[in-house]
Amino acid sequence: MPTPEQVKNWIEAGLHDSSAEVVGDGRHFEAVVVCAEFSGKIMLEQHRMVYTGLGDKMEVIHALSLRTFTPEQWASHG
Image: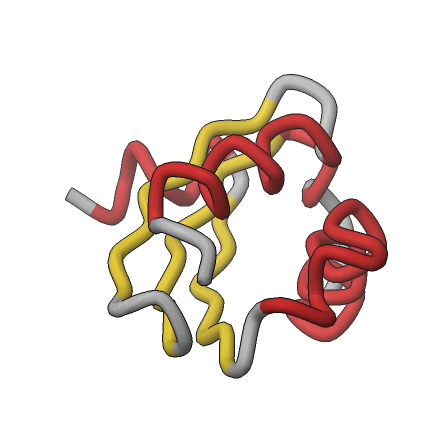
């Protein structure tokens, strides 16, 4: 089973210039992902970008809950 740190590394490797915070129990994960490439994209497109970046790694992740932000959104999020 993957660790939250592994999932974090996979997300960041799949999205150029992104940062992720991931928590989870090896099967269910929650991630906050900040990436400038999300700019101008709707949430569904942002999530697809994360899933595409993860590729076949999604086969070992049972569930992944995402919250995605541009750097500007994250800065104003508090």
